[in-house]
Each structure stands twice: as structure tokens, then as C-alpha cells.
Length: 231
Ligand code: ATP
Image 1: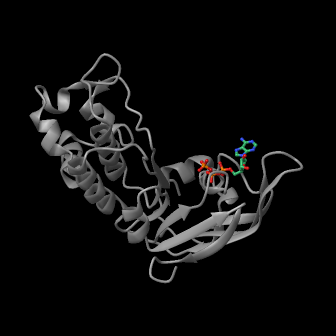
Image 2 (image 1 turned 90 degrees about the vertical axis):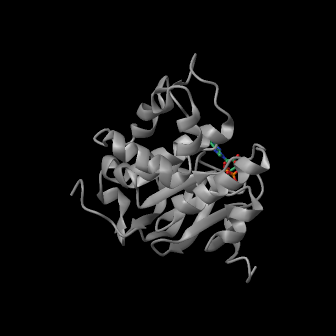
Image 3 (image 1 turned 180 degrees about the vertical axis):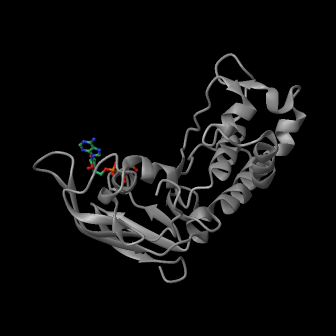
């Protein structure tokens, strides 16, 4: 059961949720996402994007209704079961003190050096890593090599590719990076999303346009959904 693969269909079914007793955030929220779909969550601050991510990752659970993964309420599974299948790439990539190799391997400790390098290559991170004095053995994090935001993102993308989850949460960076890195990050994002069901808190127009489904939220409700041609 622990290793049983999933397809990656996700459904929010009549989900009602509040953080504070008298302050409903989502009311009978419905969203059906077929496996492999990339979903861009867009909306103003406070519209509920993060809340949807919080519920999907089960940091919070629905007060009513259910969240189904491959048709099964996730409450019937363990937290560990979910987090084996759900990957995150966060806006501010978190690197810990250690080598680049260790940082990429973080989500899959059994991976060989070759698999780590393969993941970095797949995401387009190998080029800058190889140019560092100590390559994959360069120390990062506190007191280590100073990496740019884009480089840190590539490392966290490589980590996610290596872990290979069917479900992915991507909290897209708003920080501006130079246009060359921007292009590399964009290609890496495309690679990362390929074949996975992904929920993206999207800030870049290019990501929104490319996603399969745009969900436009306001006050915890879906105001519109579709792809960029229909919206
Ligand atoms: P942003 O773009 O600013 O991140 P968002 O679209 O992600 O916004 P949410 O963070 O989901 O919006 O917030 C939805 C609503 O829930 C807001 O009214 C917010 O004030 C409220 N909220 C979020 N987190 C909490 C919390 N921990 N306790 C109480 N209320 C919260």
C-alpha cells in the first residue's frame, strides 16, 4: 500500500472550510481535476488559493465534504501515504547546509549519484552545477556557495523530479530574475509538470497561459474556469 502507485485524479467535492468558527472560507467548493492536468489557481490576495493548497496537502482538512484522490477520500489513507505521492516546489526554495548532491537527494535518499545527476540534467540544472569548483559536492546553504534565486529553484526542481510524485504543488516565485534564467526556469517548469497533476499558485502569465485549467477564485469561490482560450 505504501508504494502502490496512483493515477493522480483529484476532486474537491462539496468542500466547506473555515479556519475560524464564524468565518467561512470555502462553501460547497467543487473542483474536478483529471490526472496529468496542470491547474493554475489565480485570484487576488485572500481569494483562497493557499487554502486550497493547505487542504490538498492536508495541513487542514475539510469541515464538510471530501477530497478524493483516485476517487478515494484521502482521510481513508495515512498522512504518510499522501506525502509519498505529493511533491512541493515552494516559492522560496529551501536549501539546507550540505552539498548540492545531498540537497537534490533529499526527497529520495535511496537515489544513486547517477540518478541525482540525471535529475539535474533533466531539469537543466547540470550546466551551472558543473561549472562550480566542486560541482555536485559544492556546499550550499548557510556559509556555503552563494546561489542565485534561479539556481536555488533549479535545485529544488531537480529534487522534485527525482522524487517523481504524481501530484505536485508549485508555489511560483514572484521574484524577478534575469531573462536568461527566466527561460531556463520556464523550460524546467514545463519538464516538471509533464505527466503530473499539478496545482500552481501562478504568478507568471506564461505559466497561466500554458496550464491546462485556469481556476479563477474570488472569496473562496470559483468565478470562472477553463483554459486561456475560453477565459
Ligand atoms: P495570497 O495571494 O495573499 O496568498 P490566497 O488567495 O492564497 O491569498 P488564502 O491565504 O487562502 O488566500 O486566504 C483565504 C482567506 O482565509 C483570507 O480571508 C485569509 O484571511 C483567511 N486565512 C488564511 N489563513 C488563515 C488562518 N491561518 N487563520 C485564519 N484565517 C486565515
